[in-house]
Length: 246
Image (cartoon, rainbow, N blue to C red; front, side, top):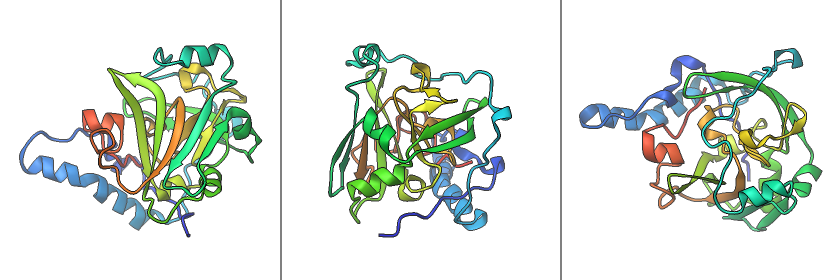
């Protein structure tokens, strides 16, 4: 199964992820089609091996702010945090041959990738941080993703307005070498405000795609029936585009 292709990018001029979908008429149809157009432009012009820029230690931002959920109060998150996430598990499930339940020790025992990259938020701010964690591709290969899987869904512990946060990517981004399950930021365990104990880094996409407080990684054939079917918490509610490439 050949899944280690990478998604590509052509710069901020094509960042359509910041746009809200129109309410009615032809404008709505055009903007609803934009994610596929945007994704196609990335594929066509950027090359299939493009990486997000990486930086040096001197470029790291002095403070990496939290955004959105910064301290979940739902479920047993507070108890888990107080215990240092000793019992935290990340389930790997769905269309896989070998479902997994990974502890933080399991995650740390895998080969690690460290990368210094820029986080670009849909709200207009950015920060540079050093992230460490295993490549998602290692985990997916260990689980044995089945041929029918087309998307990877990330389930999260944070709950906003009565709905659990989630995000998703296609297999191109899932197998991108810079897509990692990060558990360290700037050489230290991931802070709660930044998604402890583990979060996704999807370096070719805007910040809302980088799911925090990760509880499960799920391989699926379709996004239909998950949330409102648009592929993510904010996509379901605010018109953010599912493909938010930069």
